Length: 303
Image 1: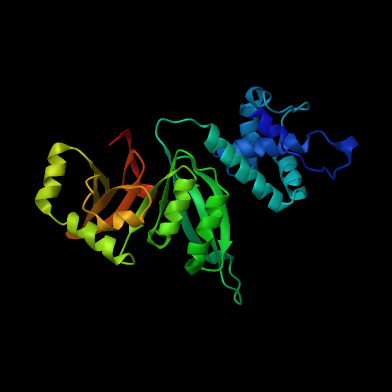
Image 2: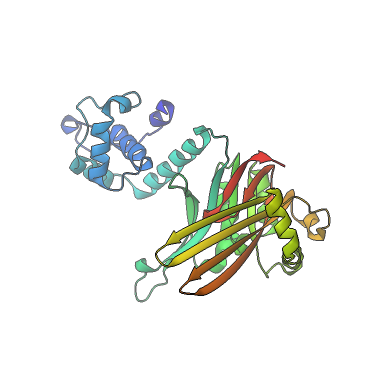
């Protein structure tokens, strides 16, 4: 971490005889504190005071920890573009150095920022690479609208260090070329399959439509996980199924290194009403991943 902090190089426009805290110290504190969950300037100041001894192993702070007012003034001096690049590099550093026996799940998802749109302007659409487990965004790009996500995804992937991660995408991002790009980044993928890929979608839905087969998976407890959540008057059950028995799958030749297929069945019970949703996906890699996107469950085992 100390080496990364030393890479923070930025011209300081302040009058040096009045400077008590270096830009490197302040920005370094902001990066570490936000990774720990600090949301406000006061939170960052409090984090610094609580962890001063540890922080001094990587930063100097010769005059103690900066106040939240000082942190705010310093951030106003720094180019937002540089801050974003630095934050992205910091998050990438974190994902590379944070070893884990279970691969990180990186959700790539788009969101329209409607609150930022003026009356005569379209709202920004942001495509982000997000780790729900860490609460960290590893990178993002702005696109004109959701329909442009397909061309933006390869650009975003190119900026990320994804080795030993599992990348998840919704159905719009499920493209053969994008799957190949993920493999080239030495990552695994979990890709949603919908009707826009008619042949493989039909094959997978037909495979998982046989109730006796699903019951057998439950009994064997192989490639099957069940979860239940209760809140107020609603009960949500999720059944995760996954199999590597795909020798029959004709479309697998088109998808680079696809190793398994899966289904998530969600049953919601509320006020005597029952609603059932089924989602399907294809998976690459030796790690068994049940579910997808923010719901992803990962087995720490191989096929």
